[in-house]
Image (cartoon, rainbow, N blue to C red; front, side, top):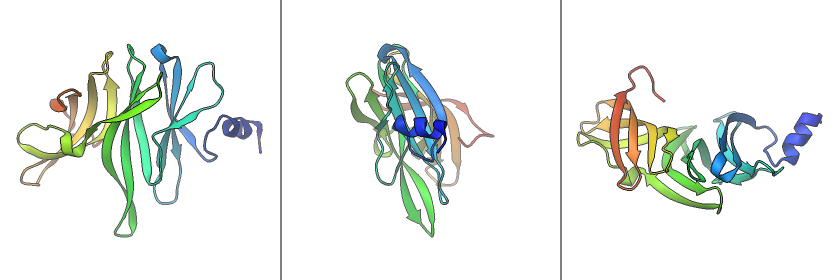
Length: 183
């Protein structure tokens, strides 16, 4: 085993993982990394955190048949938000279904669900939606900017939008249509 791989494992990271994204949250002095774990069927993502003084990363939000991805932090608070997908076998293949967005308090190490498919309030002519990607969080952690896929009531069109979600009301407001992007 080479020195890099040994240091990777000693830091508490999964053996075959690759850093997909790295963030830093100044209020908590915390490094956040999203690790992609390659697989034959479907790559899984995991999120790890450590303080800038620490040496070992700790997993956040992971579990069996769960993929956690798309972390964002707030510049004014010690908060991180991330997406959670459930891995499911369907028709011989492994699919990922969006479950929720979770908030993780980086100082107190507490986690809670802040948004799920059943409580996302979409514009009136859409009846279902999901969040494939979280793009940014407001400084105060009250608003998230996300790519959202929405389906019309007639179930004919699936459209993607850059959207703003106010977490207190769970209301989604579209900002721009993403015609050539499917997040």
